[in-house]
Image 1 (tube, rainbow, N blue to C red):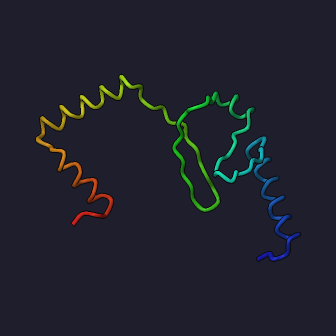
Image 2: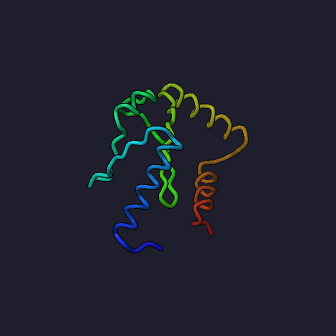
Image 3: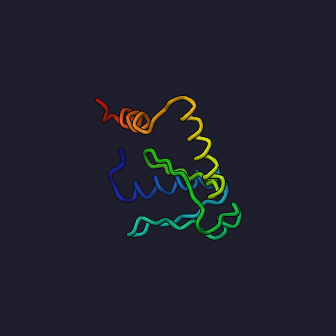
Length: 110
């Protein structure tokens, strides 16, 4: 294990160089005091990202992965709700059944 400051800097430098060589251009960004991370403009343009887009976020150890999520339009969501209601009605599923299943899944059921 490396305890000296210089040793830690060297580890960071080597990790950065590895990322650059294996992934192409790597840009560093900083976490703000509000917990925000800026996606650099060049990367936003390359990926076609627009303001207001929704992302799923996964994290483990020292890695964070963002995945763009296409949210349904209001009309599509309304259609999903209607379909779900008809599905539940045909099968005799009641609201309290769903709430109980959610509670059981979250570990709060008894």
